[in-house]
Length: 183
Image (cartoon, rainbow, N blue to C red; front, top):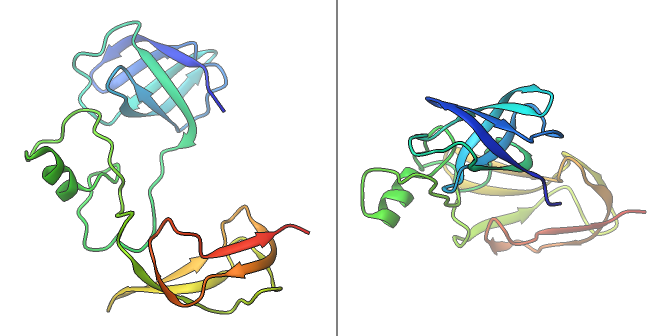
């Protein structure tokens, strides 16, 4: 859902103090200022949040918006994660350099950590239509390279009866390879 927007009360180096942040959670990911800089809530007191910003905060002003995401700072794990060079918040450095034609990362740049169009060879394992599955069950494998065999698992919060599983073949990391129904 839509979260309330906080406002910057103060900035000191990489630390931003924001007000009107009631309902926020510790370690929640926030987008700070007009450039949507990546930050993480590291302290909460009443409706005031202390935020660690992982980009250059110069130019941020009192009154600038702070957007809550309702999500923790997290990384993507999927085929394509090896052979990439990321910064500390999983931005793919080579892709960004190609995009902006510069070795410097512009503030607030957002780019998918992993390639959404490359196809990987998926092989279903352990599971067939009609089987009951629960979060963490392995239902497929993808070989990324000689060193890495990815085990494809049911979403941690999912469970149910398998109604469809993709046949062995080539898929992107965003294509559906399993459907379940709760019963």
